Amino acid sequence: MVRRMSQAPATARGASSQDDLAQLLARAGAGDRAAERAVLQRLSPAIRVFAARRLRGADAEDFVQDATLLLIAALRERRVSDPAAIGSFALGICRNLARERARAAERRAELWERFGPRDEDADPGPGLASGFRRVVLEDCFAMLTERARTLIRRAYVDGESNTEIARAMSLTEGNVRVIRHRALQQLRGCLEKPLPWSDA
Amino acid sequence: MSATSLEQLDDYVSRAMSDADAEAFEEALFDAAATGDAPELRFVDALRRGLGDLARRGTIHITLLLSEAEQFQRTSPMRVRMVDLDDYQGDPFDDVAAIDIGLVRYNVPLEGVKRVDVEFGTERTPTLYTIPEVRFDAANNCVVMCCEAELMMATLRANAIVRLFAVDGDERRLLREFRPAAP
Image (cartoon, rainbow over all chains, first blue to last red; front, side, top):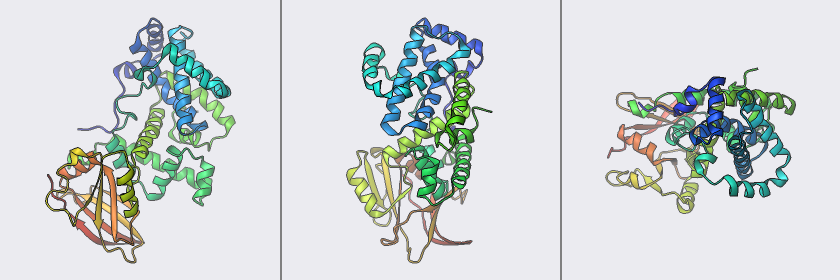
């Protein structure tokens, strides 16, 4: 039976404790690329939503790439070994980067020369680009109401803020939030189920 | 505060959350990400990326007006094929493996219609699911559905029955039923 969301790799799924994270960090620092990818795989979603709140399109993608490269550099140089601090460390990278965006292009070129490019390092997401099978996401997205589809697209593809969406669609900001929250719950429920056609 | 609440993540991304609250939220968010205990974060992230992927390919649009579909077919870098089920002879999707995206034109009388729902089912399960409120082309009396070729193939393999309904308030009227032949 086809599951709608891909499973995380064993390295990420099994290691949820601080001890396991400490081991991952130690192995990553010792040059274990699989451990490095496992650490990145955990933190990448947070980095991407951090960027999504602040930036749109290619700017957001550039930001994620920069933050990821800085994190890779820190892991390889063993600048972070405390598992309890890795989240704050990654957040610090993001915040610093956000403050220093004017200098990002210069830094990126240097980092790419030193540490890149390797696709699996820069984009440690599982399997498909998103983690969802494209066809299943399309199927689930189609089942939303037209208004919910529009709200989700504006927020999650176009990067519009709640305020911008409410204004554009002549809705209150509260209504926009409620419709979007319900739509997300519906999508999550749908994406966890098998593709209807697999049983048809 | 849970860092992995779907609603909080949505508020964060959509900037419904204030900057002050976001700053505190980010601490919890990154900690949860680091410990691998953030399923909602992974969901939101995957959703954003997946929808972006559909948008780049053009299949985030469930239906298109006929003129939009024709332009999409001309300009998309994907292998796009439009099929008019009334005109096509034989198996409409015999070469579905050679395309990326299919545009399926359903000709239906749309005069006076306010809303169209498209229902998918099979002989065994009459209603598998419904796509509500699709955009339709009243001027050309058609609904052009846009979908990934893989999804098209899945529906064909299942011998999907497609029914288009006109909806007005609580009233639902069948406009037409389609039974495309499976390959």
